[in-house]
Image (cartoon, rainbow over all chains, first blue to last red; front, side, top):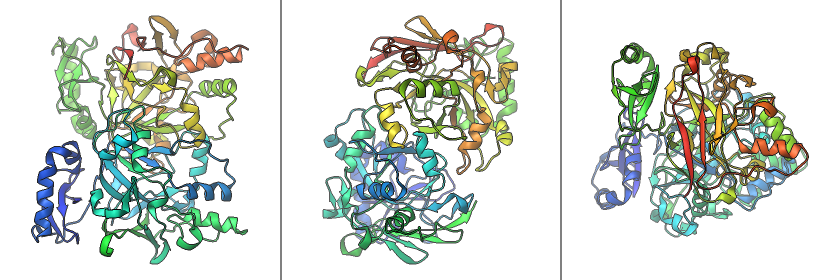
Length: 319
Length: 319
């Protein structure tokens, strides 16, 4: 099933089910996606019936209504960095010390606001090194502390597509403190349609989303690496996060920048990784960070080339 | 004025005003503290009238009702590390590289749950190195992105007292990744009564709380450093946090472990700092981390020795 949230003037918006072409909607059985995640199992049959109704042509046209992020705000956003090729390139290019851990990398980010797929994105200054990061993510129901990776799999209720905006002039300074990122990681954007993993078919395997994430910068394809190369699956990221805390329903966990070993062919889902390749190739970085007025588009397509998560295409503006 | 939240079975509890001895309460003008912070200026007169009513003997006895944390969950928790003597001791004792930044240190922590002043505190394992960290904190109303430190002062609506539980066997591993802490920083506890800064009198100055924070471990005084030695005031921590994001009403910002240069006399508000001093004195660390069954109490007293934030005394238990 496909779920989305309509802008309705309230902080959490209004939950709707969405048709496969994202053109028709049906009101959800509860007001918000947060509420649905809190009562997920009890609502399963009702949600499934709604999805069936949409599949047989029911519902109403979206019309001029607009989508917010699936969760316009969430109680928790934990972002992994699960693609080894991304970390390896950043270390090589920027002479960072290798990160010595066998555990997943993860930081806690701001979760009180997620921009929608069409909102302008405000930043205070181009000098901060404005960059995008294309990611896949999942949303959980309530997860008990100490959950195993195997048991965590059943807590993955929805899959989402995320742009984790990053400020590259600030990120290394904050990283060196060991405290993680505050200023370098402002508000993320989330594509409007959250889907259940079954809609991914064979592309959902071992807690990974084996599909290309395609990114365009100002209309030019920037990269299309595949989500398959995660060193840890989302179920393992959940178990890592829940080692010493319970996770509330509506926890969003990100994959980190989607990246492949074969960057030379598939490109990157962030500017910094491409700049890293330019440095490693023996030169100075050639690709500039974003300027106000530029647009960034990201999409993923599934079975029969269907657009899975809707439109995530935004313009960078001065705050 | 003094505000608190009663346990009522709901996730956000029920807002009450509290008398100076914390024994009498009056229902708040809105249901939750979160709502009050969202409408703070509009509610000022009503809240002040309630406080006057309590001051003249009004309200009803607390009775057998119990306090939750002032915000049992919040949209954002950002913790500073604003006491230079704490960082200096940790670096010296544990041979950490110096943190080279002129900016405040700050990480984003989990905010979907705050334990109350009397809840048992569950941890999975004593081997994780269970420690307390005594802190002061503030709660803001909505703060715009880019706020100046001077303008940030007026966004400090409430002052709170926090125990930022920390797991010392995990913390340095996560810190070395540069990603900050997830596993090492589980759920914090917050003393039940949040107060407006005016109740601190002269102890509220330049965005700092110049009062001793007293900590007892299993009944024995462990430390009583003063909150005055912050390198940055809370207004400066707010401006730092809001450099690239707006802050939602109900943002909690912590001081970091309260610590003084004169640790030898005043002691520490965390075990790790004392262990650091034991190492620097030429030996092995003598003071063990917490064991299941131990209790930790923290309090701060103001004018006329009045207990400011109520009781924060909790027992450590196995999860």
